[in-house]
Length: 203
Image (cartoon, rainbow, N blue to C red):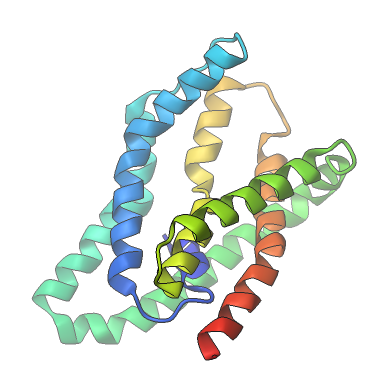
């Protein structure tokens, strides 16, 4: 949840209702759409591919919906407490994310580098650029909602992606390195867009 919030608020000012509504809606839709999408991809490539909705629901509930509901409950019942706890929770989540991600990134770095040069990086960049363009174009006339939707379009839940990939390719050793490479390249690729949108917001 912290990863999603940090990405979609980069370059945007305010619009927290839109951000949290988008987070809740996409999280719930993921439970239904992810299994359907995986099955359709399997049909396209003529191979058996599937993921149980319960597996997706478990990941989404533990990492997004439960913390989301807890935060909303505190906000509704104790708004003053929520205001005090919000920056603490945000900073704690970010620190925990870095602490958990850096050791994995260091360990997987050699394998990630090995993926460079076979077209993987170009495919990721193209995917991110198309996602940014689509999200920005569909974001409506409000410049902030355009930024939010564009960044949300290219942001993927690592846990969901890992669950889907591991469930269909249990013996594949490149799943985690490829996922980390996507996250890293998506951050780098979206950086110029974020800087552009920040300049636009200051005009």
